[in-house]
Length: 222
Image (tube, rainbow, N blue to C red; front, top):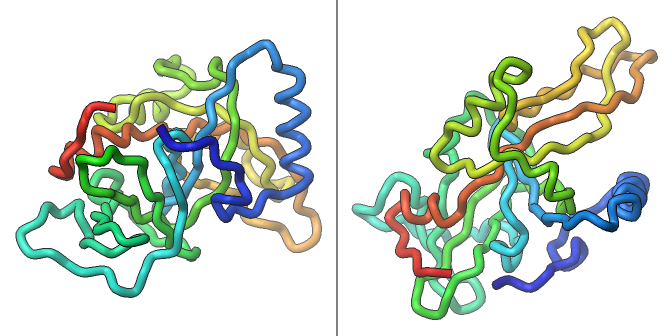
């Protein structure tokens, strides 16, 4: 199992105001167990993986080597800290309609001694967050949130992480109470009259072992 990595070691900048809000919320929920997840962007999607599956986050190296006759999901291999690491492309399983600007990074996964190291190529890493277990949903009311229900039907999505985040929108924009199925849908900023609003979103939690198996990467029992 990967160590309990703090945000600074993962190389993620945490907004102090948002961090304090999360800490205050956590203090109020001390009696409930929490799940730590890494949130990241892939195209227009916002996705998450359990922090226990990730041992480090690093920039994409320049020496990525393509290997002939490998599955489409494997971008290539690279040397990370002396280990040959397979680099996976998540867009094979989560197709994107648009590219996002950001610093591409690798989520390096925890692996046993008898399997090859693997990493996921993402557009950017957003944050590490602890959410109450009650906010990790294995089912949703499709009548209220049909897109979230569709996200749960994805074979590599094990649950949805319900979370609240701050964004800004113009007062004349159509109010939004949820960003579902992992799509990033921040409202455009108005010139002078934008306001802060809270948006509830449901972020798909990705099954890492399932993705490794689907990409023909050898997976051992954990």
